[in-house]
Length: 455
Image (cartoon, rainbow, N blue to C red; front, side, top):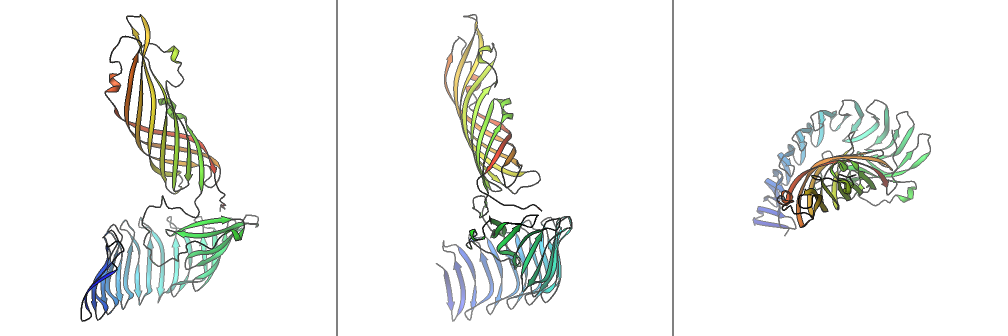
């Protein structure tokens, strides 16, 4: 059902629904035009926006919400055009932008903020035209240029945080050619920017001026993604292109499972020798899509003491050996100075033979008792992966901490001596919680070529 109306002489209550039947919007109709208070909803049922109409046009104060209920923006309309003070917010409640508008065009002093409240950008406008500056979180100038009727116009300059020129562009009605530079001034890239986003196919250059290849920016979730190739024809025109609006709502849904056009898949072979101290040597192979998700298969060799000769064990010694398998899923975040942080979980199967050695008085000799244990476990972990090269082959170091929940099944006890109930302390604790401590070293093998240019 799309819409439902209760009319009388062209007036009445109107409701519109999503295809699944949930309410999408509701309000009043007068003379067959939207009138009075209207409300719009997310599919979840949470309020998306509310405000008034007059003769089919937005009028007065409107308020917009994120799906979690926090305000995303608020301001006034006159005859369907933004008019007066408008304030926009980050999801954490901090102001993201604020300023005045007159008949749908920016007027006076506008300020943009980072999520921590620091100044991100500022501009002074007259009927949508003025000068705009944007800054790094450190306060250093990032870019500056003129805006005419809401669109970039004339020469714009871009800077590295250290102050060197990063690029320049000449705009006409929001569209212009951008030339990017290495820190030493050598040409780095050429392409077109339109309405704030990179469009078309861009050229990449080496420091010596030779053409290095091409890349095509694709925007997903309002994040620029790069598709690279040495041959310009290899870059298809297919794929979504988004323009950058004045104010953007964040895309919903988890990005971990969404494939991206610049996904960089790798295979990571690694070993965890640290856990040999606890009788568990781990060797693993991970299929990793960097800065998104990883699937890891681990093989465990259990032995404790790891380098002990079971023939030399004495009365009072305990010994175990066996094997196990684990499947681990990691959810990665963007690479930082401290590596690529992640959280994850795992499921495991273990098969271990446990031995206890004791002196049997009847035989006057050291004998052993043996019991097989099979276990299943579920683990939760957090960690960080450090890469030698983000987009190439190279060494990797992984550190993680977490907790395992173990449940064991016990086999028959085989006892060479006469001591009974020798494994009771183990059998009486089938459920055990253990810490996860991981320090792994490995090597990354890339599965496709990705070209990157360092500044």
